[in-house]
Length: 276
Image (cartoon, rainbow, N blue to C red):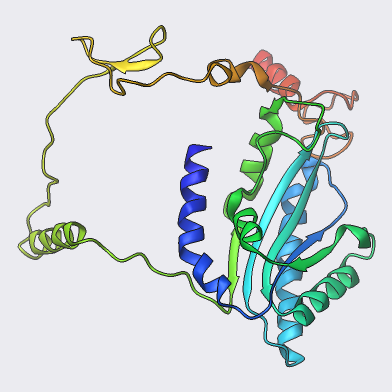
């Protein structure tokens, strides 16, 4: 979650100013019906291909299309399936509405009411870059963190572009004088055929103390002196829920040939260990 906040800040700084300069910025949501886990990867790949086709079609019709697309996937712990969808910031209401209409042509079974076009604001930009999946589910009555489902989502989006700009570019971060100096030293070392070595920092050994919730040196010095963890964070792991991932290869398809379609992935792994 910490890494995701850092990534969010980087994306907002890189794309935010450009998006805010676009004319009549619209925030669009494109959805499809939920899918089981074993169909998630190919479903997302098909969505990305169809979005590219629609984008090119709109351009060929003479409508300029600029903005950025984000992939998001959430887990429904009641139905035990997945909801891949797109959030898009796009210039122009006409382009936004055309995008929705063409999306529904590609996905006639999608709920028309679930597609959304609204005027974008500063909150929309933050929402766009916030995350690609939620740690918790959309179930308001549950605080569980479904580890198996999260692992499935992370595995299936590997190698896919979560954020895809079209017609705009990310503002490049300017290097500091310190970074430029280091790069010049590294370049000079390479030119002289010498290995570049980072300046050495004083060594210090810290060991994690469960009782103090901190990294501590042998002398007793804490790495973060005034750090006091929130109680809810200390016991956050108690919200973790591990469950069998039903039908790893499709409904009724168990790698071991077991006719019991409720045998989940964790059970299959246990059986494989027994066979070994």
